Image (cartoon, rainbow over all chains, first blue to last red; front, top):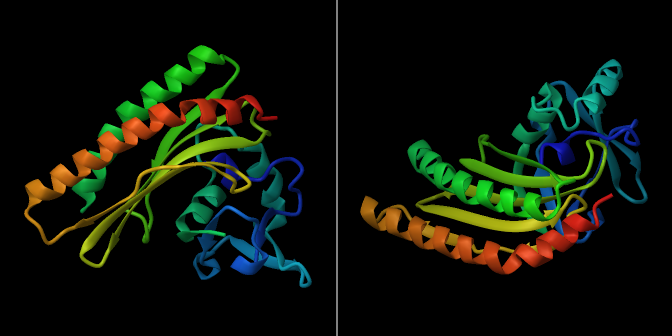
Length: 91
Length: 133
């Protein structure tokens, strides 16, 4: 579960998310309160699809975050994302 | 309330460790990760996830415990990381206004149900794990 909240090598622009439930993938979705972000930000990079990328405010941290995937220690940005989850919804 | 979450986690840890061992016995290439978190919303988020390599997809069993008003809610399922629900697990809404032994008993009942659900869902979860890239 911490892995799914940590970007993979292909996620160079950030973790994929949606700006609303309407635009979310079918199935279970995590509800994230982006106002809780400190070192992360949510960038809507496709207004038509509502696609949002969750990335570090300092993109210099991106590779380190990616490299931490699968590590036994939770990266601070993964922890920040986990702290911002305020619910789950099924679509 | 933290004590209740801690008690649930201790018992879940035993159940999920055994489940991880069962799947690992059948598929030694699976990497499992058992853990928990908590935040302002969730008293407990317990998870057991499976993947084949660090950069791959994962399947996770999750148990979310929240305090909602005068109720303790527990929700569980097994999902892939794209949100696809592999199996919906048991849920519970336990009134906190009842006497503590009733709360303990309701948690016991939910844990028994969760244990049974793991048993009947093992094949579906193992199948989803076998397809992980």
